[in-house]
Image 1 (spheres, helix red, strand yellow):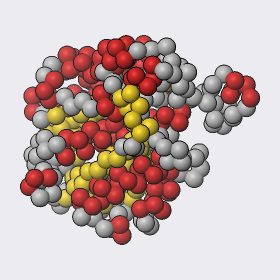
Image 2 (tube, one colour; image 1 turned 180 degrees about the horizontal axis):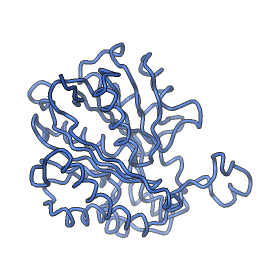
Image 3 (tube, helix red, strand yellow; image 1 turned 180 degrees about the vertical axis):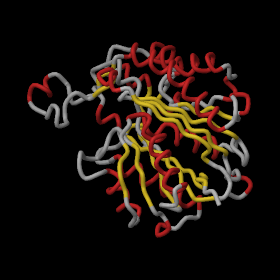
Length: 334
């Protein structure tokens, strides 16, 4: 009998602290109007002092596990997508595993903002191959720790948070198709230059603020609007569906102008494209599972709904997944 991976639980968590566009006006030369018209973002969440990526990941995962009814001992594998690990080593997945009381293998997946889609792929593949029955997949970021709040081109974009899903083996499709891609020739367009083996942190790096994220915004924009429609269509074709069959397109929440261009190129009406970046900003690997959690808790997802999840990020990387939603909505007792 063929095995499939279904999403049986979803959860999200956002830090308490809110940073509005007006707050940023007091830090850098920018304005609420400039940020809103160019990105669609009004506010974002910021981790508290001492709060870590693994803290956020554990909180989101606790919700997903509770909703799924899966006990910690039943989790066979933990995959954590992140761009902002607690440490270069040990893995943030291992930190999260301890906070959740799990004993399963745990590993980080680092494909920048596409990390959740990559992790979803690996989790589904483990289930489909029979190597796991239950996989916890998390996207979590404390990305503002890597942001230069004197750089107005990047500090207005990003926020912190975490989202998670629980995958379980089933005899009917949930995750129907996933396509992944990477193009390392664009690796310098979105990069944290210092802090790794290629360039350890030193005084020169600190003076240049090279421990923070640097972005070539125009190149990233052109890349995103090219690969998101293509990846979405490839995943739909692989699963035997078209754009017309989608209940929701859930894109990486990076920039409202990128998403509007994607809508136009796919020919999908904006009523079927989910956006929450106005209140979260770009939460990188957390953005897609956070959006799923929003859709679920607002009772806009029901069993049988076809959704496409699509992301892009540094690397450059991209990925899209087509999923049939199988969880009953909260008002039905889920």
